[in-house]
Image (tube, rainbow, N blue to C red; front, side, top):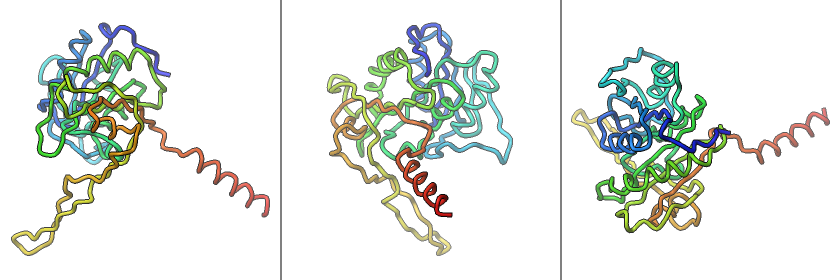
Length: 266
């Protein structure tokens, strides 16, 4: 178990994201983190790395650029950024908490498998640091309501870290696309179903060659009670614990039975 952090004021907090070091969401999250702690470090990708998932750069060298005493840009992925921060920059005193985001757009349902925001939290978790991914959901055609994330982020972070959670678990938080007074509450949810990529656009380039855009449309289940999607669409902040271990225990037990029986027959 990650032990509870009952007092964040003395905690070392690492902030990262996938939208890049200059994104509005990470600036907002840095403000939130500095309201919680005196020891905040920001290490994030030099440029936007949305939908890169948990990718690691291994075919070229990585470079870090110092922007100020505790702010660094990395010319790589969110995973690279958290890895370099924890195992190099902060190796003498590792962070007590990793915060990733605040992402421009939700990370809900199966979207989390593509998300660089969630991947940064996964990397923190794998490196032994409790980690939280935070995203601001956006309805189609609407700008992000950063005020909602800013209003609730500190409260959610305080409540979650005061409890603690399993070492193979990260916390995924999504803020709804409603103004702060209209938020209906904070809901503990399970992962819903939401799949990117159903809207493929086929085009022809000036040389007559075919190319494709993967569109933004997502197939999602909005009516399944208790899911992150249902909560956010209903105006609530969704807090979802996610496991790094993807093993399905039920199928594992079924396969053990099948292969044990076959061994006996032989």
